[in-house]
Amino acid sequence: MPYLSKEQIAAAREMDLLTYLRRFAPEELVPIGGSTYATRTHDSLKISNGKWCWWSHNIGGKNALDYLTEVEGVPFLDAVQRILGELPYVPPAPETAAPQPKTKLMLPPKHVDARRVFSYLRGRGIDAEIINHCIKHGQLYEDAVHHNCVFVGYENGKPAYGALRGTLSDTTFASEVPGSDKRFSFAVPLRAGGRTLCVFEAAIDALSYLTLLKLRGQDWRSANTLSLAGIYRPREDGSICFPAALEQYLKDNPGVERIVLCLDNDAPGRAASAAIQKKLSEYEVIDNPPRSGKDYNDQLRLVKGIGGRVRTHGGEAR
Image (cartoon, rainbow, N blue to C red):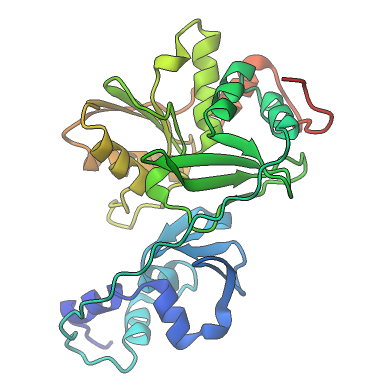
């Protein structure tokens, strides 16, 4: 078995997936807008902002090494050697790379109203007042072309992130707007306050939690909620690529002291929650998965007795 030094392995980890595919398999890259790419072999695998995520399998990472071992199933040593290619065994001194221009966020045009989005979210149990609150503050609207829900995150008052969710009852479509910066994912309210933050995997889970608070007679407006826009599967040693959205939120809101992790009640969600807790030793952290169902929208629908597929056509007047 060939021996690889720590330096070689470190050099292999430095190569991001986009660079690797451009160098060794350019035919795999499929541009889908801005600096976002998919791959021909795995159409649900997206590459953006130096990271990749295989949405259909709920895994992701930063570098080409993770991709080769977790997606392509290449043995670790073979993957390192494949990445090194013609590179010397001792990694060269790091070059000073020119700063890459930030990709412009390409939010889809707004529909004249949000009736289909409103109907879809109401069908999933979300409270009308909460939906209207998000629409009023520019955090939610209906895509004019595909009628998707568009959940918008902000940086210093300007849109910086967009999550897409299909509204057709027979689709599970979920994606991100090209140019999205995960550091500024969907959060309610826009201006945080208080010492407690509740963290979710998706925007709809956050809105479901706020609805549950309202059903219990609690003040949903006083809660701080953040969507991580998905999670990365922890590595074999239990460590994790710390969520960019949570890292940025805590940086921007130093008053937060208590973090409630409301991640999904499945294997990836439980593993991610445990890994994130290890990284947040300086905070009071509470693991709070849904009491029933996979996520907080499942719990909300069970509480409300909503079953079957969500009705999206016709709509409920706002």
